[in-house]
Each structure stands twice: as structure tokens, then as C-alpha cells.
Image (tube, rainbow, N blue to C red; front, side, top):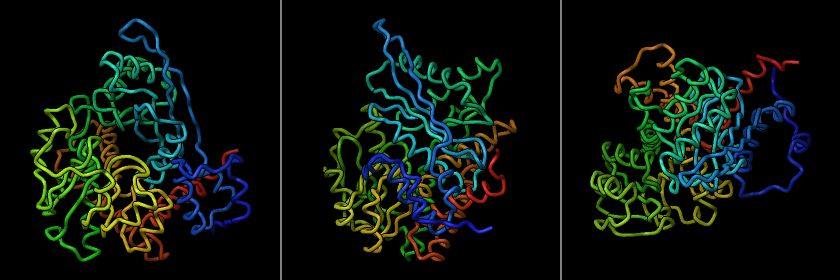
Length: 434
């Protein structure tokens, strides 16, 4: 039964408020719209798939170390659960918004679908500055957030994971709080846990490993050997640092990286192990690292390199930056690092962009492995995890590349076509419950 799509009717589903072109949710929707038109989605299916299924907003009172009570705002958005329980991280940040969480939840839906996971998409967030909070305050915040969302979370309903400014310890508190309310230990309710609590080997490096895997696949498509290519990585957190190290292991020359303190460049290649050691000594940043030439983040994005890996935040590559990009390949380690207005510029320049919902899907794929291991009570070695991860990422890349050729579109639009099509087909088979 074919899906039919009517552009005039589709416009009726837009929110009546003026469109914010800088909105993360709008960025996601602009790409979704193109895929929906290619797939000829019916207006009803379009409306169903572009709207979040459920949005939860909660006030989180926390007793601070000073004794005063401070109330934080928390979010959990379930975008879609047609394929299975929803899956997505929780971020703690002072600038997190419901709109951003909605966009990230939508991206998770298409990302999980793209790599053939039995998950829908979700995302969570709390408006706070974890850098200004003590470990005790963060624990109380996490536990109250989890308790407030106890009826939302569940190993067969909604499964959180780490994201920006959250980590294994915070996931351990989520696990414990949920388990105390459930009156039984539920390891599968959360992923990204410490290995000692049912976490998976290889999970911490999985997103960066996925970036490496698809980058190698892209290099093969453009006929460039790893030993011949130079790489710049924006972001030196878990994803960026891991991707940089793994690409260097494959023979690439990583000539630039950056973090919140700025960029660092060496045309002969950086000593990444030395830089990671420096970051560990300084509390997680590269501030004060002197064995490289300093440069700005924007300079890094426009360096004369073969591969650019933006692994920081959203909308780092806008139209003006795109005009100056010289890389042949962009592998998006972050969510939404390229603004929609830059897509056409990059495509016209012949830049092969491996989109976020493909390039950084290694993290949720390894989270799926962790969930499976928890449910079966049997755990895999890191080599097994890496082998399965590489295979799934390579399969997803090949599928997206073939779809791009079939429809003569960019890899980004092809990734949305693959992801949206699987969810739409599942929705058609399940039907609409009335």
C-alpha cells in the first residue's frame, strides 16, 4: 500500500507559531520533510511521525549543600515507540530546552531505525550547571528526576543513557533509584552503566568507534587511503578523543583537535596520547597544552584537511562556515552540528557528509548490546562488542549510500529516508489503534 504525500495538506500540520530557523527541532524537521516527500507519506502518517508521542516536564526540588532548596526543571520526551521501547540519553546543561530535547528525541527515532534497532527515540534533560554542583547535589538531583519519571522509565518502556555532562555514575544512581521503587534490581532500565553494574565492555568508546568505522567507509568511497588523509576533530570529549585516537590507529594523521579552551594544531600530526594525559591532569580540558599551535574553533572547521569530525554541539557549521570548508569528508560525531542552511552549500561543493544519525549511531548500538546482555544475563567480550558494532555500522553505511544513489540525494537525506521508511512501514503494519 503506497504512501501518498500532499505538500499543501502537509503545511496544515505546521505549528501556527512563526518558524524559528535556528530551532534544533526545526532543523530536524527540515530534513524530515524532504524524506517524507520522497517517501510520499500520507498527511496522517506525516503528522503522526513528526510529533512527539509524549512530553514530560517535571519540577525537581533539590536540597543544596547550603541547606536551601532549589528547584530545577527536567524534561523527558518520547518521540516514537512504534519499533519498541524508546531509547535516548539524559543531558545536564544550563542551556538545555524542551525544544532541543524534542529535536534530539526525533533524531534518536531515526537513528535507532536506521541501524535496525528494536527501539524508538527519546531524550531527557535537566536545566542545571553540573560544574557548579557538588557530587551530593548531583546525586540528589538525579535521584529525584528518576523518581519523578519512574512511571515513564522501564526496560520495556523507556531506557535512558548518558549524554552531555552525564556519565556512568549518574546512570548508576538512575539504576539504583528505579530499582528501589520497583522493589527489584532492573539492570536493563538504563544503559551506559559501570561494567560492575551490568554495563557493557566497549560501550564507552562505541560512539567514537562508530565515527571511525563510517569514516573509513567514506574514505574508501572517495578512493582515499587512511595513510594518505589528514583529520581535524572539533571536540575532545569522549566521542571526539576516541574517534581521533582510533583514526590515528588506522593510519590517519590527526593534525587538529579542539575543546572549550580552543583549538590545537600540528601539521605533522598531534601526539594524542600526550594530549589525553594532559586533559586528565587538568580536569578534562586541554587548557595550557603547549606542544601545538593554537587556533580558533572556526579556524579548525575550515582547515585544509581531508576529513572533518565535528564532535561538539549543534549548528557549528552554518552557511558562512560551509563556504570555507575544504574537507572532502565530514563525519558528524555530534548531534546536529551542521545547520540546514549549510547542507546545500556542502553538497554543491562535493563534500561527502556522513550525517549525525548515521555517524554517531555507534553509541546507541552499543547501548542496545548492553540492554540485550542485561536481559539475557550473559555478557560479551570487548572484541565481540566491537566486531558486532563494526558490522552493524558498515551495513548501515552501505544501505544509506545505496539509498543516496537510488534517489540522487545527499547521505543525510538518504539516512532520513532509510530511518523514516522503516518506522512508517511498521506503523502501517500495526495500524492506528482506535
